[in-house]
Image 1 (cartoon, rainbow, N blue to C red):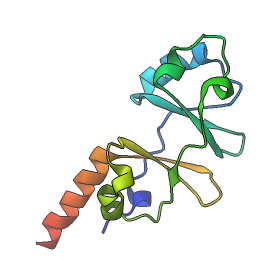
Image 2: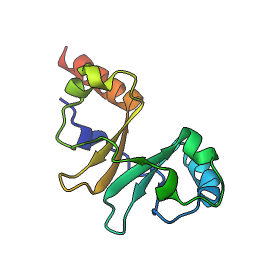
Image 3: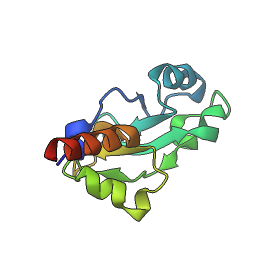
Length: 124
């Protein structure tokens, strides 16, 4: 059975709380993701910048417009449980962090579904 930690990608765009939105827009677009994870100097997840927040005043700081305290998951979460959870309906990406909140990366729904299907196919 695949676990979130087995599939986590560490290429997600990150930024510091005092980074300016205008400086982040291109970096986020270039990353291939539609969001940026706001972390402190210890990579502790503080928030997310996405959607409208990335189109705010270019001089706004990330911590002024970010979504506070995004939900994170542990790497020990089974993918099958994540995909079957009602609270995960509509989720495109999960932020994966340690129990102390340090960012490990992200897991995409598409990758989780692919891994689960591969696992089922091998089991047959």
